[in-house]
Amino acid sequence: MTQETLRDFSTRWLPAIESEMRAMLSGDEPALAAYYGMMQYHMGWLNQTFQADHAAAGKRLRPLLCLLACAETGGDPAQALPAAAAIEILHNFSLVHDDIEDGDETRRHRATVWVLWGEPQAINVGDGMFALAFASMQRMTGHKVADATVLRALQIFTETCVALTEGQYLDMSFEQRGDVTVPEYMRMIQGKTAALVGASVAIGALVGGATPAQDASLQRFGQAIGLAFQIQDDILGIWGDPAVTGKAAGNDILRKKKSLPLLHALNDAQVGAQFGALMAGDIGPAQVTQAFNLLDKAGSRAYADGPERAA
Amino acid sequence: MTQETLRDFSTRWLPAIESEMRAMLSGDEPALAAYYGMMQYHMGWLNQTFQADHAAAGKRLRPLLCLLACAETGGDPAQALPAAAAIEILHNFSLVHDDIEDGDETRRHRATVWVLWGEPQAINVGDGMFALAFASMQRMTGHKVADATVLRALQIFTETCVALTEGQYLDMSFEQRGDVTVPEYMRMIQGKTAALVGASVAIGALVGGATPAQDASLQRFGQAIGLAFQIQDDILGIWGDPAVTGKAAGNDILRKKKSLPLLHALNDAQVGAQFGALMAGDIGPAQVTQAFNLLDKAGSRAYADGPERAA
Image (cartoon, rainbow over all chains, first blue to last red; front, top):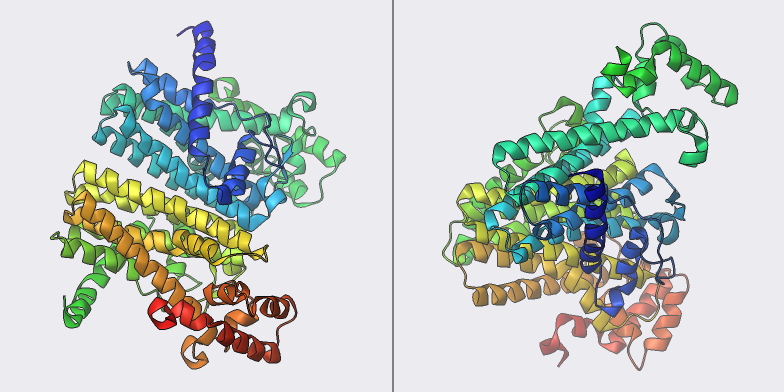
């Protein structure tokens, strides 16, 4: 598939993904209008007074990968649409809960659900989206996907849900620790980010007719994309251009976020102790400059960029 | 089934239910020991330092109803064990999140998960149990349950998860309102309590071999048990003996909890306005006595007890 047809593919399937998700996240009972309204606000379809909105949404990377994997293994992406919607709804459930857990007050330049409607309702809205993600997966039965295939897809999906929560547990527990290693970090993002990207590809390919061996390979391929995606995000969090990211220069240094480059420097034999002492204190502009110098000395950016560049 | 054999049935199957649940809520990765430890604490199997405990657990009503329904429709309860475990895990996920949402600091005389480990970890522990409940359901495939039956069971289970969150939304929204009606309340407990009891019976009967028509009837029967169970709980919350309930006399009056008897009195043509004014102010022992008198005048207890007694 060339780059041009990849763009065509997105243009063709993105509206179908949105409409499949809208069908899942709409209740028809007047008493529940605000409940589903909160979900639709999070998705960017409604504003905070539940009027139609067209807020910036996510890139829909995961559902597009799911449909692409289905097409590339010879299937009809329409059959995998309920799974693609399920994956994006699951991703968004995790964002609603992560925002509460991390105390994040904005997402995509809008107030988060818990800020507008309180933590109790936001927890429950996330739970509802979690349940509706499973309901969406099950709609594949109505798209002529064989029962055994739907069950296998549900198994991958469920294992991924468990992996997501394990990754989130590790991420939160790392905040309390000063001795996190790079392998521990890689294990964490394997659960928190890579598992769902892997599942997106694996479920799409399964519906498309991949053999179990092909499907397992494609799942690992998706997981590798997920890891790369997360590490790229880590690099941008430190060296990203503020004009592009909309965040301060060295933002993750200011936040003391234990991302891969920081952990690499903290575990570096030469600068680790000095970097650790620096990060243990208050961080202002002078400390950010010092941190950049130490990250340079440790080769942490080259390390994060990958072995070819580090070599 | 006589009362004696019902007791035998419980004695026989309760350990199997516990062991099925333990198999689901155990991670074997050392880095995740505390994560699964928090789940096992909630279940009563571990104490807060993750040592073995035998704390008072729930009555396991729902999984027992599931296995009973399977047996009574001619099936082998062993086949429905993963579903029974899934139902009880789902119930407990909802308790972990409800405790955060309601700010409840104790459950069964122990600190709740969020009190011990904070809200962020508790939200995530609930999410993990939610995912593991689905994983448990899917284990029926390994118990020789046909794929179509597992998928139908998963459909009932998922619809129930959605109903639970809808009921929880309504319950929380009622706290902000002074004009909740009895039909609105019944709709709320249909989602929050009755749906899962109905699903317990329906899924057990489905695995046992019930026809779709039988299964739908049994689901309604289970829902009716669930409604009765909740209303009985409401009655005990007001008129329960403090020596038995471990709570203050008129506890739900003190908490201004909008349970069925209170809503009945609030909507009573004769005493409604007076009762509303009373409940709008501070509630002390004198107000509790007044409230009991008004509930009496409105016939709210007889109403909650049921039409036969009210007639």
